[in-house]
Amino acid sequence: MGLPTSQWLEATPWAGLQPLGAPLVLVMLFALSCCFLGYVIFRVHLLVAAVAWGTLAGAILANHLRNPPTGADYLVLCTAGAALAGLLAWLLYRLTFGAVVGLLAGGGVLLACGLPPSAGEWVLAALAGLIAGGLAFACLRPMIIFATGLFGGLAATFCAAILIADGPDRLRAATIGPEGRAWLAAVLLAGAVALSVTGMLVQAKLLKFVRSALAPAKPRSKGAAGSIHPRLGAR
Image (cartoon, rainbow, N blue to C red; front, side, top):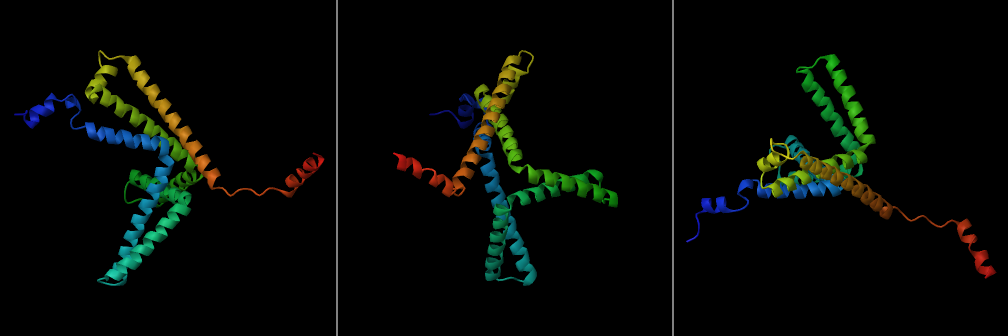
């Protein structure tokens, strides 16, 4: 007979990671995706979130217009809301992202000041929202590339380190513990920074390549074409 399940789990070499093994691998793969494809993931996530919110808005509108609404009401209004929100999020993603960041910044200021807010606190929240939203609108691409590259590089490196060390406790003891090696922690941090910078550069190059591939070809000017013919005639 084989070992009981509990004894078999304790006998496996991954016992120090249980139940973190599989989640750490998933987080590492997601972090690598963010590191090298963070801007693409952001655009897709923004589109999916907009479609979900548009569908919800269509359902609310259907309940408001008719009580109880029919299946056709849900079909028409939810589909229209999802299509409109998705289209706006894809075409006006900079404005959408700036508006979301502005609302979050303004709401954070209101919560920090306490409820109910006074008139001065409303003005302060509005200013914070305008500044944060304006910065997000103007610096969207570098901001997303920097944030996703940094998160992806750090998370992927330390998830891999935990897996190799067979658990977070052993990694902590090997790096910053009383008998740990400081140089090992420095190597891990340097590797994470290097991976983050590489991911940012790859994202920037990939975005530049996609934009140049989708850009329409420039027609050749008549002057450039005319300058070729004399050379051909001279030959």
